Image (cartoon, rainbow, N blue to C red):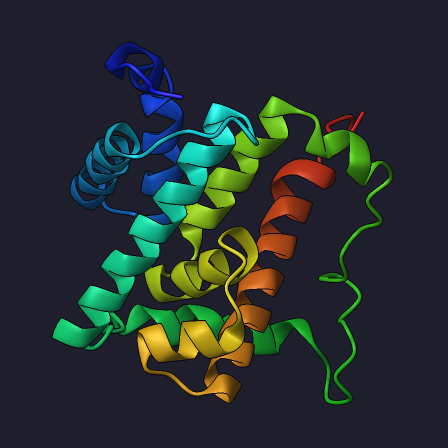
Length: 190
């Protein structure tokens, strides 16, 4: 099935938002979205999925290609503050590795209902933006792009142990931020 540019343009804002969230760079996001739309115009849409799903799949591949290219050109540099921000997690636990009582996550009463809320996703995006760039990138590659740890390690030239630590810290960061800004607010999950 051939597509016209107007049909593709309707999905551009969604694709741009998705790419910006993954790459944290508006210029790079714009580039991969343009490459995605060009690839879609040159390809044949079989109609086995929705157009948005098909375009998102192309976009994911373009993002991974960009990440691989960047990792070959220069190592992914930490900005120094990554380690400082991540070391804050140690203060959340006592000597035995248990949560300190004031920092223990609250019970999320209706997590399924929160996933259907647009406001929840806005809070989630803000929490993701607070993560250090490197941590957010690894989390996005694993949880959003569904890449294997081996693929992530190869693309970013990191070890599997380092990747696991980064993923743990990303999940902790998101959990704490969501607990504080969504689930901890009275009535937010209702």
